[in-house]
Amino acid sequence: MSGRRARDIDCEALVIGSGAGGAVAALELARAGRHPRVLEEGPRVSPAELAATAPADSLRRLYRNAGLTPVFGSPVIPYGEGRCVGGTTVVNGGLLWEPPAGLLDRWADGLGTDGYRLRHLAGHLSEITRRLAVDAQRHGAGNEDSRLLAAAADGLGWGWTLARRAAPGCAHRNRCPTGCPSGAKRTMATTYLPEAERYGARIEPGVRAVRLEHDGSTVRAVRAVGPDGAPLRYRPRTVFLAAGAVGSAALLQRSGIHRRTAGRAMAFHVNLRLPVRFGTALHAERGTIFTAQLSEFGGLGIHVMAANLTPGSLAAALARQGPAVVDAALADLPRMAVFTVQVRMTGRIRVGRFPGAGTVLRHRLTPYDVDLLRFALVRAARLLFRAGAVELYPPALGVLNSPRTVEEFARRSDPRGWDLVSVHAMASCPMGPPERGGVCDTDGRPYGFRNLYVSDAAVLPGPTGISPQGTIMAFAHEIAARHLTASAAGPVRRHP
Image (cartoon, rainbow, N blue to C red; front, top):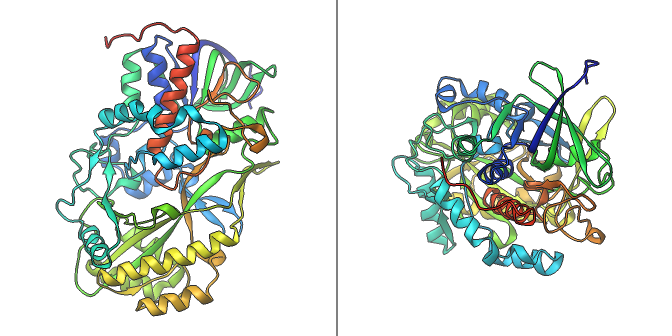
C-alpha cells in the first residue's frame, strides 16, 4: 500500500464485494436503514456501455485476469469470475436454480446447518424469483442447438429441462458471457444494487479491500485502496464479506483470520467445452446461451447444455486442435455448435499466497473425478451424436465421429491432460463445525467474530452441483436476516 496516510471513513455497515451475495447484503442492510457502503474492485458499466463495447474488450475489463486466472495442477484450469459492479452476475448466463431439497438436507444433517433447509429458504427463493423475474427460458427464435439437445434426450429417454433464467425479454443477442447488451438479463447491477442505492446504500467502484484490522473478535477497520491508488481506512460497525469464493478466503488469510482453514479446501465445478459439427446447418450463433439443459445425470453433478457460439468462442474451444482445424470450422460456422458439460468435482482447490505472486490457486483431481469426467464425456457424446452431430472435437487433440470412437478416446486419454475450465467455485470458508473444516457458524460469522459475516459463495457448506447463484443469494438473504434480527434493527423501511 502507498506510504501516504490513509483517509479514515466511518460507516455503520460495509459490504466488500457486489456480486450475488454482496448485493443481497447491501439491499437488506439498506432497507433496514444501515446505509451500507459497498466496495467493488472493478468498474461499473451500463447495458449501453456493454452494447457499445467489443466482447473481447468487455472480457478483459469485466473479468479478473481477463477470465484466465490459473488453477495450477493437472491440468492447469483457467478460472473465470466477474470483477465489476454486480460481480459474476453481469457475465454469467443468468441461470437461477433453486437448491435441491436433498442437498440442503444433507448439509443440515451432516454439518448442522439445520436452519438452511428448503423450508427455511423458501421465502427467500420466492423473493429472488420475483425480483429477478426468473422463469423458464423458451426456445424462441434461434436456439436450434438447444432444440436438438432436447429432442435427442427425448429419443434416448433421458431427462432434460428448460433453463430457468433471470432474463425476461431476452433479445437473443448471444453475448451473455461478456455482459448483456440489451439489458434483458437481470443482474445485481440492474436490480438489487440500484434498489439498495434508493434506500441509502453507496456503491464505490474501483476500491480494493486489502486487509481487515481486528482484535481477534471484532473487526475495527478495513484497509483499502481507492481508484486513484490512495489508501483508505473504513471504520464500520458491521462488515459483510462477499468478495467471492477466492477473494473472501484470500482476504481472511491476509488478515490473519482462520488462516489455517480459510481457502484450504474450496469446492468447484469444471466445464468440458465440446465443439461439434452437424450434418446440416443449424446456425447456432442465432440464439441465447441455452434454453435446454440435460438433467439425466444431475444426481452426479453432470449437466449438458449449449454454449454461446461466436467465431471467437469457437476458435478458443478449438485451440488445442491447431490452425487448420480452426480455419475449417470457422469456414463452416453454420454447421458448428459448442456444448458445455458441467461436472461437480470431489477434489478441492487450495487458495494460497506466495511472496511476489499474490493469490495462487492449486487443485487436485481425485481418481473419482477422473472417472467421472470420462463418464460425462461419453454420455454427452452419445447425446450429441443422437442430436445429429457428425464430428466431435474432444478436450484433447483429435476428431471423433461416433460414440464408439469417443468411448475409445475416453479409455485411452487421461482427463488430467484435458482442456478444462471453471466458472464455479464455492465453500472456501464453509458454514459447518470446525472439526470438519468449517470456518463460519450458522449465522455466517467466522468463528470467534461478532461483527464479521461471510455472505457469498465462500460460505456455502459444499459444492452445489448446479449453477450456484440461487443458492448463494438465498443463503445471503438468510444471513442478513439473522444479523438484522439479532441486532434488533427494527421494522424494514418502506420504499421512499
